[in-house]
Amino acid sequence: MTEIENIAELMKDIGVRARAASAELAYASAERKHAALVAAADAVWNSRAAIIEANGQDMEFGRNKGLTAAMMDRLKLDEGRIQGIVDGLRAIAEQADPVGAVLAEWDRPTGLHIQRVRTPLGVIGVIYESRPNVTADAGALCLKAGNAVILRGGSESFHSSKAIHAALVEGLKAANLPEDAIQLVPTRDRAAVSEMLTATDYIDVIVPRGGKGLVGLVQREARVPVFAHLEGIVHVYIDESADREKALAVVKNAKTRRTGICGSVECLLIHRDVADSLGVELVDMLMEAGVTVHAGEGINGTVAATSDDWGREYLDMDIAAKIVDDVDGAIAHIRKFGSNHTDCVIAEDADVVARFFQRLDSAILMHNTSTQFADGGEFGMGAEIGIATGKMHARGPVGAEQLTSFKYLVTSNGSLRA
Image (cartoon, rainbow, N blue to C red; front, side, top):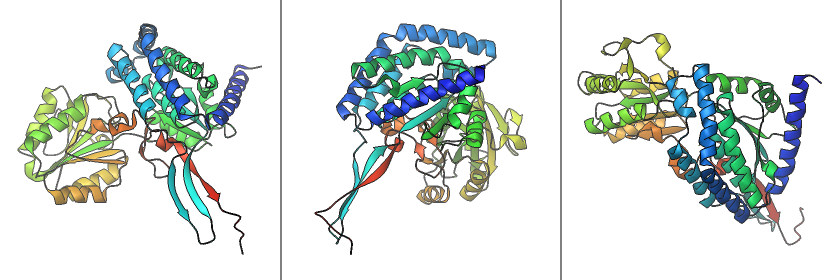
């Protein structure tokens, strides 16, 4: 048997076991899922030394591979970030169980009583790159929603993901739930990804979480439905009515807090009437913070912007900056170059804010708010499995509720159709 055939058999076995686990999870009680997540949180914290040691192997792999500083930051785990993973698991555990929730109910003149209730999707495949915390976030959210999950982490986070996954399995065991409910693909071989993308018999939806290359590959080749965003090309528009202090603070945080996340602002749009005042302050502030400003016409930045800088996701200490005539100019630019992920307006004029919110269709629109808040945890979801920018089924941060579908329950006292 060839190596590829071995991968095919491996993934088929994982899929069969996931499908069987999903059937049991669909009716698992809220209490057992809660217990599994709490036990998993304890296991992650208790094994933090082993997780950090495993992460050290991944960091060495990343350095040898030549990952950027921003990507290395995504990959790194320390005790503080592990505490964040634990907090996320506990937050998901304490959320209301979405499965079985009644979304709507009504009576018909024919004697029918109809309920629309949440139900799990089934088996979810998650393909992600260098962020090992996704192992915990995705595993926990899928479990909360009654789904089995197949996790395929990136080669860079291989050891970290394996160590975190072991803690999740401890949680499943403690709650007497099937260990196959959360499976981690045990190989770096990319053939495993191709198998997942075509596993229509075993996987109900694929969630890719990573860069343009990964998400584009998944969207092109998947035969399974996909929740995805291609890129986080995030814009902040500075209106002429913007408050100076808010603008300076929000833009700095939106760019520099963590440059490697999809909510990091990548393009600054400045109203022409404040370009020579607040606009100059903003650009100077960014450059002083170490950001390379790719400057459009009329802006004194670090380097001159080229056409390639509009619609570019840097995921690093870089930002494009451009002068626009007004809010409509900002809207036109975002419609042309944005990715329907997250966009923000800094303004005190309520009419400008209303126009920005009404005429753009990004999954997340913000006002006077750092775009770094584009995160399921910050939305109160405990964590997220990703940000969906499509319009079918799920949109924006994908939490436990978004990982469910619904079914109709119809009862009557013997109603017959005439």
